Image (cartoon, rainbow, N blue to C red; front, side):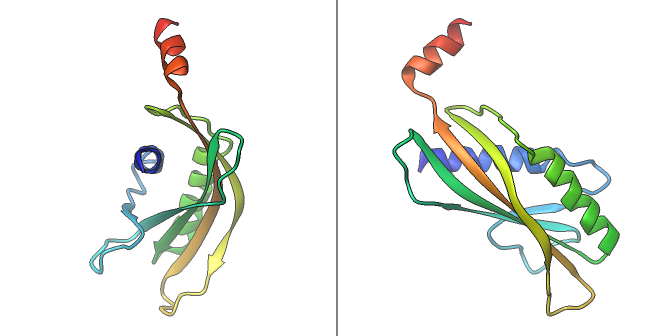
Length: 136
């Protein structure tokens, strides 16, 4: 669970790197009913564990906005922010890869709903790794 919490912290930090002009409301799993537009909701799901010393996750970033061109600009900005990103954060070493993106039909036709799906490979730092990094 510690790895998941640290990964969520890393994801929020990356989501906040977007240009200030967009300033989306960022939520985990569910946006509040009074969330301002644009708003971004992210969710992470652990995939099948592997024997390679890492955890693999699927990260979905949903973007909702009433201004279509801005929703697509936000999507493009997040593609650039997360593209092959390798950002050590605390005890984890996550790397992100885009797997898909596109529009989703929303019941409210005045809203543009986009999703960016990423694969996250996350390695946990070992005590040896931390010792080496602290000495360098």
